[in-house]
Amino acid sequence: MTMPTAKSGSVGKAATSGFLWLVMQSFAARGIGFFSQLILARLLLPEDFGAIGLAFTVTTIANSLIGFGIDEVLLQRQKSIPLWEAPAFWLSFIISVVGMLGMCAMAPVAAYWYHSPELSGLIIAMALATPLRALATVPAARIRAEMDFRFLATYNTFDILALQILTIVLAALGFKAYAFALPFPIVGLLRAIWFWRRSAPKIGRSFRRVQVEYLFGNSTLVLLSRTLIEFVNQGDYIVLGLIASKTAVGYYFFAFRFAAQPVRMLAGNVSNVVFPALAQFRNDPPRQVEAVIRACRLLGYLVMPFCFLQAALAKPGLHLLFGERWMAAVPYVVILSIGLPFDALSWITGALLSARREFSRSFFYMLAAAPIFYALVIGGGWLDGVMGVALAVAIYYFTWPPATSYLVLMRNGVKWTTVAEFYFMPAFFATVAAAFGLLAAQIPGIRATDFGQCMAIGVVMCAAYVGLLALFRRDMLHEILKRFSGVGGKFRRKSAA
Image (cartoon, rainbow, N blue to C red; front, side, top):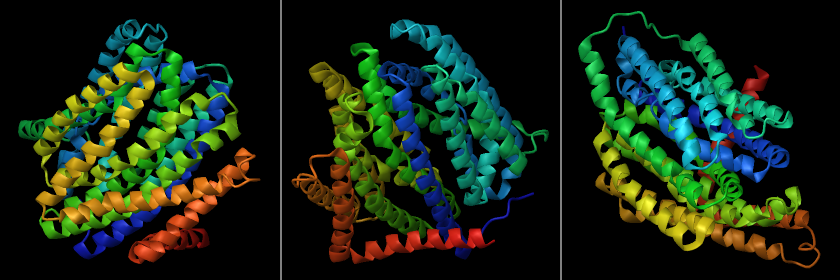
């Protein structure tokens, strides 16, 4: 039995449709996350954000074990996924149970390490979600292989909405940091039920030892890479937990969540669309590279203005919403919003390596990245505390992810000038547009109010960025408008139906 596969001509249509659905999901998630952040910032204190940030240093690293890299290996075998469902399911589930037990064992150690007794309960609460989410690993791989991005976009929006509503309700009821932790197992269970109703795997089939060995062999490098990625993602919190107060960590955690949303939403969704298409084109390398170039260029011109706008709005926006309560987080929001978008394109080049089964290359890139990141963060923390860590994180994302993307793309025959354009042309346009916006915000009569400054920055920066595209990169402006007009058309067709 084999999975139905798309013909090469329909893969592009599926990828385009997937992009449109996930763009809609991105905007919905961005709006949900933004309003949720505003409400939680009023309900909770910086030390509550700090506590959950420290708990994540244990749970996110352990949660990299959930799929054990099995989802990516399954997508490499799109024509015969049903034959691999049983071993993939049992491997991922057993390993997730081991991960849950490991987190529970680490909980008191982390509480002692960070001098925060409440971390034990937070970590254990989030650990319960690990095997529940693992139940959806194989169904999710099937859905991605079928390129049913409409289902994924719909569910992801529900997942985010449910998680945020539960968090807000629990925060309002006085659960403090536990408001972040307790929703995870609930939403994990809902995810498993929904995905099994859509695409239940046949887990009772017999399988051979050679299949288990294959999954282990090919998944191990993916697992190691993901684990290293999580060690890097949590490295700033690990260092801050040792050198800063929980309140200071809370300001940083708040800022990072705020700054990272555009990158994670746009880059994550684009890579989710691109990877299945790249896997289907694995016997056509030139077409793979062409798809990666288009995705990188589009993502670069989308993510840079979002993040730079966020940096420009940080001071008046946070003051307008919260007064002085979160102003200590403003410098971190600005620094991280400028540094993090340079990481976005590495999500696409990473998808290319996975689609070509170059797992060892991905692993060695991350093996080199981890000591660089920790050296920067430890040095930054030693020199200037939380501010030094924020600067070190921004410097890392400004340099290392672009360097690895250069290596991947140039190795596939892409000119260095083409790669440089993905980063520096949209960053330059976004910088100029932000400068116009900030200048407009200083006009007498406008600078007197936070709301006036926010409106001036938003309107002028958006207009300036579009104008720069119209003058110097009209092709990209047309490409972006084409994509978003497609979103509108698809939405209208859906409504009419």
